[in-house]
Every structure is written in structure tokens, then in C-alpha cells.
Amino acid sequence: MPKYNVAVLGPIPRDHITTHHGEVIEKYGCATHTAIGISKLLGNEGTVYLVSHVRKKDEDAVKQLLAPYSNINVDHITSDADQGDVIKLRFVDQNKRLEKQTGFMNPIVPEDIKELMHCDVFVCVPITDYEVPLETLKYIKENSNGKIIFDAHGPTNTLTITGDRLIRFWVDRDQWLPYIDVLKMNLEESMCCWFEKEYDVEDLGEFETHTTDHLPKLAEHVLNKGVESLIVTLDAEGGAVFFKEDGNIRHEMVKSVKVEHVIDTTGCGDSFAGGLGFGLLEEPNNYIRAAKYANALGALRTQGRTFEVFKSKKETDRLIVENYGEV
Image (cartoon, rainbow, N blue to C red):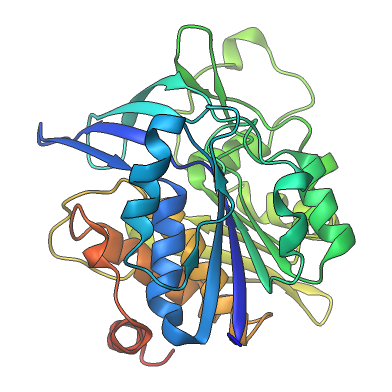
């Protein structure tokens, strides 16, 4: 019997990507990065259950894509509603992208995961605010001892009737926090999570600054609401990791894993979340260690356009030791 069981919840969008070099890439994204990254690390030590909804015309292709990974269970990838995310991405630089969405996955609800309450970790990687709803997190928390890792990309992004994907304030944040163990986000998303009681109209607009001054206050708030760790990715700088230790909030910077040439950054955040999930399997409260695996998977994701970029645990551990001195 496999030692570990990991559930990955999120969309598998059919992506049409134009890179900042002008190259065009078409592939299935998001939760596939998370699941395959974990799969390669687990090897024979466990099973990854990928939970998603796709278009009927995409189901066979998605399952064929995952077929080489014998430890990924695809029984929970369904097309009953014939709904799935379809997204066009155009990168204007290495990290900033413009997005249009033309297909929409039906939400992952408790019925979809009721057979997975034995899982040790639930890695939730929504990319829009409807894909992994609050009721699903509540169901997991009430029926499983598994650790819930949640990506704030979902609730800080919404969809308009013109297909534009726009960032939004996570105004109902505090209703979600008691049902999240590890909250992962990037800097822009963190700004969506920390808002004023009221704004002057002229103060509302695009986030111009890249300050991190608000992070300690945000961390204190979310940790006091029941979240065990807040992890904020800061691109090339690495990740800011916050957690409580002896009643006090500890803040550690875990530097990024350096790469020479970035080929494709699509799926880096999803890969990062997968690294967190794997890292917390053996040591559920070692958030620094988890962040090292997360940074490693995020860095590996940039090194090519296929899933061959992900490595075994032995190879990934070697990369971690090269960068940090120890796993």
C-alpha cells in the first residue's frame, strides 16, 4: 500500500500561450504541473489523486497526458458537465501576462472528493474564484485530517463577460481562513488580501508598488485566524515564510533556486504549490523545508515546455542541497 496519498484540486485548462519571446505554446496546464511535479518526487512512495473537470473533447487527451505517471490516479477527472477552463495567455515580459478565458470549469464540490478523505495533503490550486469553493474546504476540514494547502490565486482572480481575467480584492477572506492550513500567494495577490476599510476614489487603481511592508500585518492577521503558515512568493527573491513558533510569529526568507535561462514560466505557481505539498508530507510543520521543495519545483518548471523538467526526489534533493546546503 502506498505510503502517502495526495489530492490535487484544480482546473486543467487548455492553454494557448504566447511567450515574451513571441513563441506559441499549446498545452494543458495548472493542476497538471502540480500533480506531475509531486508524482515525480513521490515515485513509488505514494499516489496523487488529481481532481478536476474538463471538456468532453479534452478528457481523453488529458488522461493520455497523465498516463505515463503510474502513481497519478485520474478517476476523479470528469467531464459530466462538459465544462472546462480554456485560456489564452500573452506574456508581455517574463512574469507579467495578459489573459482571456473562453471556457469555464464547473466548481469542484464535496461530492467530487468524498472518497479522498484519507489523503495526507490536499493541494488546492484554483486560478479563478469559482473553481474550489469554500464549501469544499469546509468539507475537507470537517472530514479529514489532511493538511489543506490553498493558492490565493483563485479568490483574487475573477472573470468578466468579455472573457477578461482580472484581479480583485479577496473581501470575504476571513470566512475562508479557518479552513486553510497553508496559504500560498504571490506579492500582487497579497495586496488583494490586505485592503483598507475605505478608499478615496483616486487611491483605487492598479498596484504600482512592489512593497512588502504589508506582509507582517497580513501574516499576523491570517495566522491569528487559524492558518498555520503564510507563504508569499517574491519571484527571483524567493519566498517569505511566516508561521508561529512558541506563540510568536517567525518570518524567514527562503531564497530562490537560481536558474540560468528561463524558457517558460507558465505553471510556476502551481509547481510551487506542489512542492509545498510534497515537502509537508514527511514533516507536516516544517514550512522552511517545504518552501525549499516549492522553490525547487518552481525553478525546474522554467527550464522547458514539457513535464520532463520535473525530477525525481534524489535529483531534486541534490538541487536543494546545492542551493541551501541541506534539505
